[in-house]
Image (tube, rainbow, N blue to C red; front, top):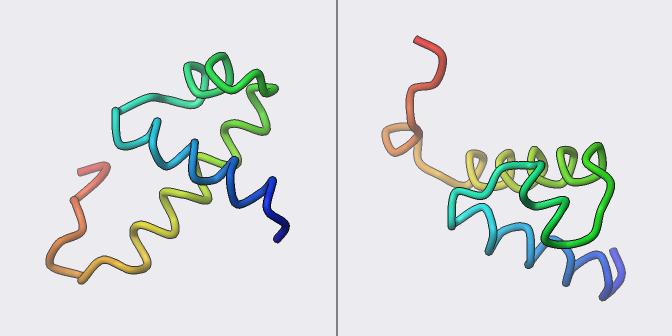
Length: 61
């Protein structure tokens, strides 16, 4: 991962903390929605994989 990718992921993390979805993230960063969706999923996966199982939210129940 180069510096540009790391900076982009950092921006996506920041927007995700503010509950920004993929479409809003795409608009804010000037990205295609498909790329923004992939980055949001990557950030969400990273956050879930580092959280303790008891701290993970229940989704889809």
